[in-house]
Image (cartoon, rainbow, N blue to C red):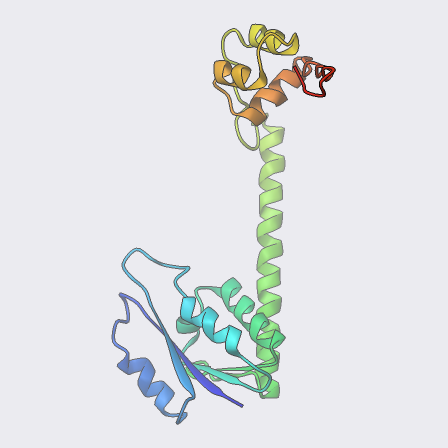
Length: 204
């Protein structure tokens, strides 16, 4: 069984001493992983945490000084707990007194998972309600429709008749390829039939 420490240093807590003093109460560690953040980087800079989790084996224990040092938010915390649980490792957060090796700790973790799920469902319902209200008011949901450029029908007809290639039609329209073919199809234009191969076996 290995014991790991984890610390996060950022602009609000650049000094390692506070977290180190809390971890010192545990004793020796096989290794301490430290992530450091720079100004303006509020999330996504936990490469050492990810590296630590990948090394976890059944029975290993991860110690962190506090919840805010281990994770960015509730969703992130639940995700980290899930990864550790999947590897049958344990988590101990010193400031909050949470230890997954105890019955009370396991209950606390389950409560966090329930709260996170409740928050997700609440936000999902709020989003759905907002969309319904917007539609009732006649407001469009999603990206605005792509406008058809001048002469688009003539471009589509020339393409559909085989007078110009699809690449040329897209260039003239100024649209992305997916938008061009979608709009052309909505207007009833279809791709020109492929030319039959010549006697030599090559397309003309």
